[in-house]
Image (cartoon, rainbow, N blue to C red; front, side):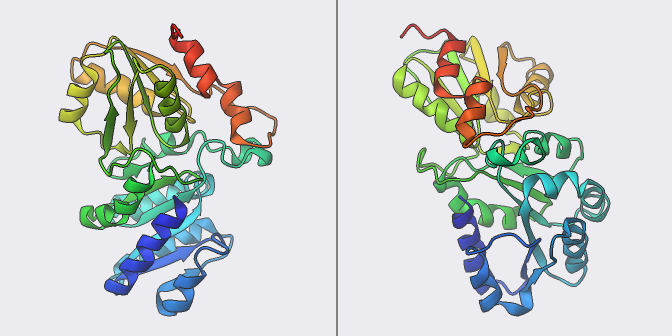
Length: 295
């Protein structure tokens, strides 16, 4: 997913001289071609994420359109004041690219488990939030962000997910029945897809743009289902579960929402994200158990 997005930016930089790429000492063996091809529009600020955001805001004042790249938790938690004051208050179209999501860095412990990033950012208005869940969506994402011309945060999962082959913000994979709908994004969405393969009665909704949610489409998608499980690698109250609870209330929908997500920080490490997905019940087996599949 990261490679797709970086490649898209690289291509657009050859077409648009306003694009500028910044990194906080991240992206080894991934971004060197940008620095080599566009040395006047590339900057490594070092391990100084707050500078990354503020310098990006300054570049807007000189006519550039910056993409700022670093690890998601550092981009958001360390830089919240700079995002609010330097970018959002001025409605500057800076794009923050956050590598790693959820438990993508399993051996590094809770300081690097990114399960509370976009929920923090969601408290600030006027910034769009994306989490590409497939290669097809990531391929079109840079173009869409430039067209929107707004502040944006992209939560980029590790790995390359080839399915579903859709570039829509909301992608519904209709099951054979309308009782159960699994709603997800990022890495856990792939577990939901696997659950549907095992139990074809289950429907799946993948949300690639977490904010803003498409009201008209979402109302129609949620309406037929009596049980909706929100599966995410983020705290539920500030994550998609919380967003959907608010959405359902404001739009007078009738739906039963159930959250499958981490509820607290786990002070341990694992060899892979699967260790934490299993612990919190957001792996394939955990989802099947929670939904009470008849299989």
